[in-house]
Image (cartoon, rainbow, N blue to C red; front, side, top):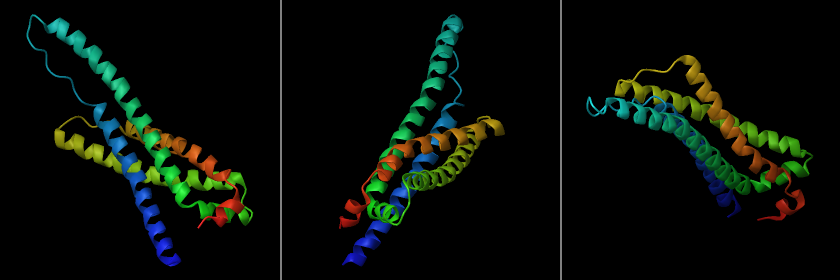
Length: 180
């Protein structure tokens, strides 16, 4: 019976880990695609100046707020998923602490794990963004823009994992080993 619980816990952990990679990839897709969406054409010649000014202001606001919102959403989702993973693996972290791992080691393990998944997710997100932009016929961004987007997505994911990692590092190892 204990073996079945261990297998189920391992599959739950793999599912949540895959969710982190997918969320990070979709956030990269959303941020990459929304920055390059062209504005609509002006309505009429007499309203050309007004439409252009309003369109420019709205497009500027959307371009500034949409990626920020997607990054905040990504950080929040990563934090929630990592917190669930920390609670699922609390016996593992307690065992490591009981065997001599210090708090910094636990934090480093969790943040590194999230960082590796974020690299995979950001790569998937950039590839998907490039495919979508290519299909839509929109201009492709520069390599430096893609690199900056990847670095930003990875940084946000790692930032979102710090809080659950700190929570995992401060749990009492004796109490965690007693949990069934």
